[in-house]
Length: 200
Image 1 (spheres, helix red, strand yellow):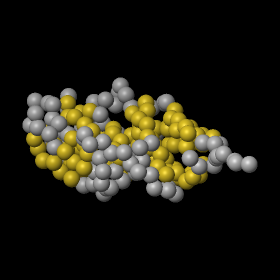
Image 2 (image 1 turned 90 degrees about the horizontal axis):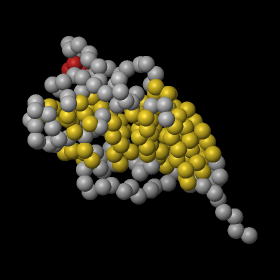
Image 3 (image 1 turned 180 degrees about the horizontal axis):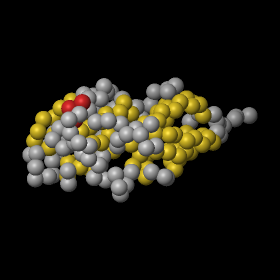
């Protein structure tokens, strides 16, 4: 007799607290201003990574895009598989800059005007918070992951990862402000788990 192992499923929700992550040290003398999109939308990236086996990543040849427009990053939250590229075009009629102090990939693209762009390849997994040196209200997050299994959801919505192979996994949730939640878990055959992830 041949036994078949049925796929597992992971469902969950993400709760957003009121704590805020501070901007980098170069902004300590500037007044804090609200994020242009905070009052209308709040996106959360959720990624599921396999820990006990290696899976070949699918990395697009064409860079993903985080534009600078209306004095904001658009989108302000992005998920990138390890090895993927992101281009940062400036669509505003003013100079912008993109920099990060985050350990997975620290960089500073300098100041550049409308019509120009800069491109970076991200090779280390982790959360990269991005800012503009000129405009302290501009910020976002890039989640770099060893997986192609991820979602970007609206705050208040649930996520669902069906048809999963049994094994050990890491779930990472992050928002544009860099608030995060990380959970490791094991899924068995025909397992259905529900989790709640608080962003901190």
